[in-house]
Image (cartoon, rainbow over all chains, first blue to last red):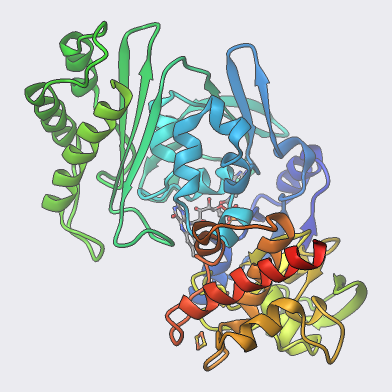
Length: 280
Length: 164
Ligand SMILES: Cc1cc2nc3c(=O)[nH]c(=O)nc-3n(C[C@H](O)[C@H](O)[C@H](O)COP(=O)(O)OP(=O)(O)OC[C@H]3O[C@@H](n4cnc5c(N)ncnc54)[C@H](O)[C@@H]3O)c2cc1C
Ligand code: FES
Ligand code: FES
């Protein structure tokens, strides 16, 4: 096992090309649990936490581009939160301050856990993920990158470089249910994005299916059912139907964290709550 | 660890360069601090990022040293609880913990001290909510946190009184 601290993206790609079995290491908050507990013994490690091309975020015309090594603490920053509130709110719920100072967006994507908290906001925002290798770069949708629990479609020599999301005019919400407030893996999450210009709502669910899912029926229904010119919160029957359709999009399981019935219930409650908040 | 190359690298800890020789590459920073560099102040209670007793500052930010690969921490500025004060003297935060009975078994204390010290360095007048948030990654199974929060609040007040 050897450990290299990479200094540029080109170096990362070259090292991976020369040795595709090498493991990438960003914040270490998933990787080290495997080393400490599951006997993970990678032959070689490429540390990417200080690669300049992977760090920070930039604003382009109408979009935000985030480096893969962007940390949760950086996503919590008010300047970032102003552009991508749902992602900032999701980052705020991750682990603890210590975990948020280390854990990264790219690590959350590569780990591809059904409970990954950045995934529902990225799904709701139709994020584009750029991955690269010495062979070139390609751009993926979230559902092309994450295809099952802990299953991503990265080739062995590829690294996630960046994630791009649109800046959308309108409020956004991320809600998470867990057994306590700090340091908790999600039992169920929702990310809701209101698009004022298009008069549409995007709703994504986390921890309630093998991969993050969009509740497209709920989205289509509410686009017609909402009273877009009213400052009042939606009526009770509208909220109830929205919650029902959201829950119907979930395919949760029973596991050590919760039951499928509770997860479905939680999705309906959170979808109603998020909609109330963005529409009033 | 047969068949695995031993590593030799240098870490920057508490202001000095420290050589690490013949190390297994998978060692966490926590392990290296305690077992190789003679810095046992940083504690290990879970080895999985959950308890915060291994909190150190890396480039000024509190992180769990059990979640850091030591060999990948090369070039980072690491500060442990031993590096917060001068040898043999308590820092103001440590003194406040003593004065307010915020230490029982003491196992969580070093991590809490590092987290609290960092909080006061970036936010000299924290609200109670901000104090709770800053220590939300540090588990204590003895104190119930009340005295810990009181100690941190008192340290903040003392600092502001000194500043005048
Ligand atoms: C105590 C604790 C609490 C946690 N709480 C939460 C939580 O609330 N919500 C949540 O979603 N997660 C949580 N996690 C999980 C973890 O923090 C996140 O998944 C985090 O985003 C992982 O990022 P990292 O940079 O630490 O990844 P690492 O551990 O460095 O890497 C994880 C995996 O991703 C790969 N990888 C990393 N970066 C890239 C890249 N750019 N391209 C390709 N592959 C890459 C690595 O090779 C590795 O296989 C928690 C973890 C701990 C220890
Ligand atoms: S020992 Fe590192 S967080 Fe518990
Ligand atoms: S004093 Fe015992 S764990 Fe905190």
